[in-house]
Every structure is written in C-alpha cells, then in structure tokens.
Image (cartoon, rainbow, N blue to C red; front, side):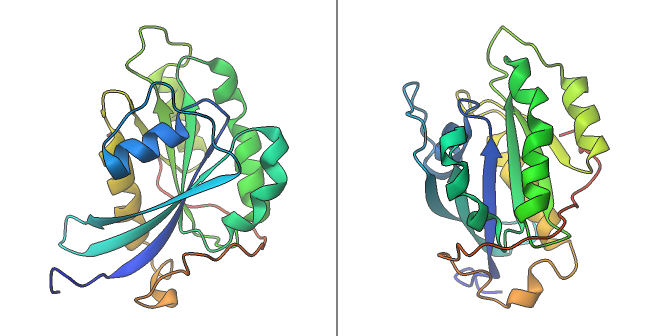
Length: 207
C-alpha cells in the first residue's frame, strides 16, 4: 500500500465520568499537548487523526469525545452508532469514577449497534501520587468485561499512544468490524441513533 493511501476510517468514542481526563487524553494523542486547566467538554467534541499501524496500514481515526455530565446524556446516544471502538476512561485517584464504569457499559450496550465493538479500559492520571484504584482492580474489571486494558497519564504522555494503537490493531484484526463499510469506513458526521448489544475486545492486555 502506498504511504499516502488510507486503509479505512474508524469511529472511536471516548466515554467516562466528567473530570477523568477524556479530553486531555484526546488532546495528548492528537496534538501532543496538555492543559492543566482543560475545561469540561460541552456536549461532544470531535477530532481526526491518521495513524500508521504496525503492519504499515494508514488508518484515519474519527475520535468523538463525549461529555460526562448527566445533563448532556441526551446528546450522546446517537454518537454510539457505527462506532468500531470505545475507550472507557476512569480516574485512578477517584474510586467513584471506577465504580460507575458499569453504568457506562450499560449505556454502551443500549446504544451501540455493533456486536463486535472493541473496548479499551484506560485508568488515567497514574502520574498522581494519590491512588484509590489499583492496577489489579482495573485489570480484573477489564477481563470480566472482555476489554483491553492499560493505565495512562495524559499529563506525562505515558501509555496514551499505546492505548489508541492497541485499540486500532484489535479493530483491524476483528473480522467484519471495519471491512463491511469499505475503504471509506464510517461517515465522519454519522450521528444517527441505533441500538443493540455491544461486546468484544480482548481479555485485558497487560500493556
């Protein structure tokens, strides 16, 4: 494949409670920047980034960053439609953000319309000396729900690129998850709602 060709466009969602660092992870991955005063996302944010996979395929990622606040929940159901990958984020320094992961998985199951969707669990803010959720707890949760797993820090950049790369690799390795849409992948502005069961991913990588 020519270095200028794009294999496909993948729709990736970032979900989780408000304040866990979803937008910071996205900005670190896309722009390699970090803002300690990063404001909360209002509704949904969207960024595009091309990624060269390990086997030399260029993949375009359409990444949707959803607001975690309850008052914006009615805005997000349509954004689950046609997503091929989801990054579910919690804050390792706040146990309550980890405890609410089940709620986000329930919402994902309700609104996602791809049964083989790939899920990545990310424990963010490992740069902090304070920790309320151990790595083993995160790994156990990821294995229980058949998710990839990694701990990361948007502040120091640790694990951020790896999280997206692992997710994309798993999507490309999943039969029928992206080929059906053709080389054009998903429409970047597809926000229609849908619903069916969502499951998939792998049983917790130890990256």
